[in-house]
Length: 185
Image: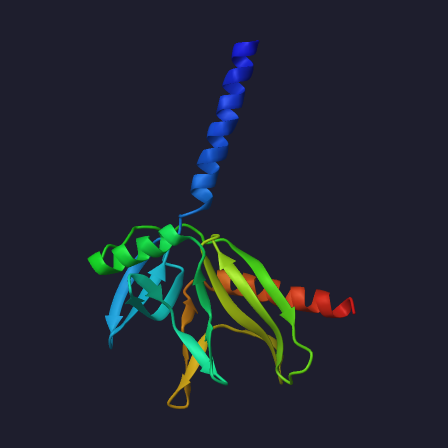
């Protein structure tokens, strides 16, 4: 009886640690493109991030400046993932990975005093990469603004979803959260 209990406990611990290992670090670079001194990468064949650089051994994501401040819209939450990205890009190593990418809503701040920006939010992918975005209100209703910059009167997206289901799921979750929080007031 004790032996069976010990085997069960060991099995549970093993599954727990394997589960933790699989929950983190499953995001992989599946494409690398170099263009005009900038690097575009695709993660798991699902999400493309444009215009990154490597600076001082770290991934340098695009950011925007406003009123004398620089706002970062991307953050790597695990130091080892930064090193993985740097090594993969420098050595041009791509993975064969089409695993789904999970997401969760992290920050969510309602903005009451702006005509079009209704909330500043962040989405975390696979507990590794955080992306800032905004809930916007336009003539056709609520929509999500992912990191982008206007260049030559056109918007250039820093993040593009190859998997439209993931994009739609994120947008639906963010808009639903906004509606839920604003209806409580």
